[in-house]
Length: 254
Image (cartoon, rainbow, N blue to C red):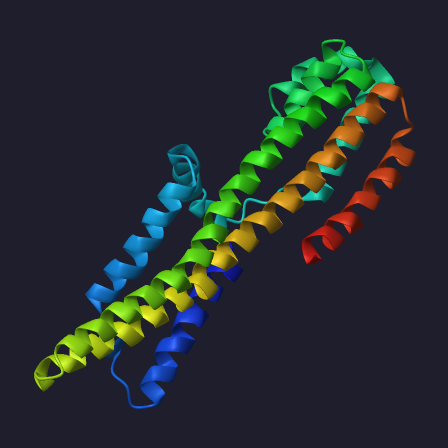
């Protein structure tokens, strides 16, 4: 489990709710069904209009990636590649064939299979890079779903606030109905701004960070497999691959 994601959501929501309670507010004062329907329903409708349904379904299914710490350790990938490099150095490339079925990493498994099947280094690299581009484009579309929702939510919250104020203006002669209209107005704004900045936009950023990490690991794998094909000494291959680890840290920090 990705503890940072869980703690981030808990701390963010707790800070808002706690601040309200510290000022003497009540929890039920920020629990407004009407405001929730306006903001979350309106935001979801806007997202449906913006993206194909398949992208939205993929975005929903990707939520588990936010809370699951499934990142591949680049050190593990490098160690595996060096082990395969030593096998090839002693027994030849065909000796990797029994190992391929045991590899859990899809990208490494496919790259090694193509290498064992006789595909040349240049063609293999081009084929795997093209697959990487397709994968990256798909994952970035998924992240954009949440980013777009985070852009819509505050605006829909303002619409909810305006609707609440309209209700207030229509019922000025009935003071008993003013409170509900004002509550909807302010709570809708909280829902819109809060959901965007505490949930939707951070999810988009998290998905992009995970993608950047995965692309860096895939780059290590691809360079490693090409290095194995080219007969590079395992020691020099390992040293060259470790350069990518630092690049991964730099990429994620952007």
